[in-house]
Image (tube, rainbow, N blue to C red; front, side):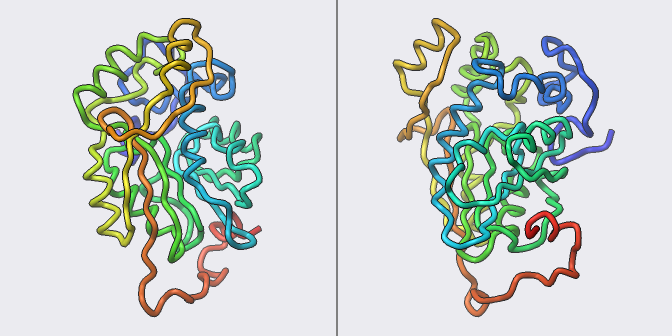
Length: 275
């Protein structure tokens, strides 16, 4: 089987969501494609997380600013970025997800988050939301994010901690609650400790910070009782379940004013980020 940065190999045809061939299989995103934007559907919790993630993204500081959304899925981040001044480029390995994202204003790029087909220093912000816990090498994804960022650019994202509590809450319990966690969508062996993310960022020139993330209790209890959202996600001191991370690319002395790569370097890549 061909191994990819995202577990499960290349995109496959639909399978019954209750019987995934293996955990973290990309085919589940094909079979659940209709759920991306369905209110209170299987991906409802991803909408809550997207809203919280977007709060970490500041307004653009220059004309033509680009935000690259790694593992963009169906483009759930798009409405929360409206008015912030970015061109929203979404990278995902699943073609059906990209079609849906494009319908919501995202510029689609088919690709692997560990080998992004975009040039160095092409963007102002990289977002990696609910992605690192789905890849075999999360440190490599962080390295790719750093490569894509301009000096002073920002990485933001969120993921699931590698703790027994996260396994219990998000797999054993969460998968039994409709709309919270689709069965089989996670492989808990791939959950990511914060130290790994921080160390990877620092190695690649990012100043990193981490904070916990939790649902607002009253809204979450209502969701558990009724199956209906939305549920605001709030900052938390504890990181045992899910956490957000933020990293600023440190400008390298003498390279702050380096020009963008010339258009001839990669015609396809530059057509994505510049047209």
